[in-house]
Length: 162
Ligand SMILES: [Cu+2]
Image 1 (spheres, rainbow, N blue to C red):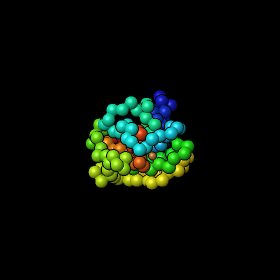
Image 2: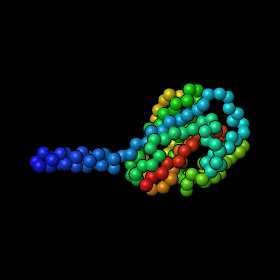
Image 3: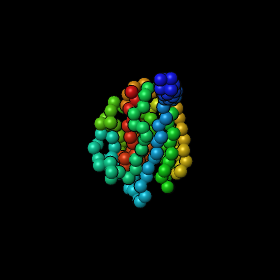
Image 4: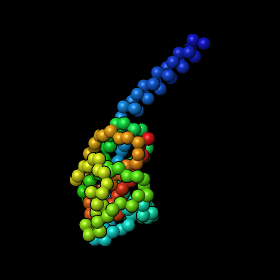
C-alpha cells in the first residue's frame, strides 16, 4: 500500500512540473519550404488564403508544429529550409483561414496596410534560423512571407491560439 501511494505521488509531481513548463511558454517550430524549379512570380499563382487552391501543388509553403497553442507567451523558431531563396516571416492577426486578404496585383504582394502585423523577421537566408517571442491572446494568426509572389505561391499558414 505504501509503495502504491509513493508511485501515485511521483506521478502527480511529474504532471504538475510539466503543466508549469507548458504554461510558461509555448514553442512553435516554423519551417519555410520552397520547391526546386523555376517559378514565374510575374503573375499571381492563386494559392493564397481563402482561395481553396490545391495546396499539395503549391510551390512554396510554411509548415508549423503545433498548429494550436495555449494563450500567453509564444516563441516562434523559424528555419528557412529552402535551398536558394531568401524569405521573411510575418505574423498577422486574421479572422480565420478562409479570409481573402487585400492583394496588390501590381506588386504581387499582400497589402500589409490592411491587416494587423504583430511581428516580422526580414531576410532569413537558406538554412538559417530566426526566432521571436510575443504574447498572444486567443484567435487565429497568419504566418506568411510577403516577398513578391511568395504568398500566392502558397507561403502561408494559420495557427490558432486558445
Ligand atoms: Cu518567401
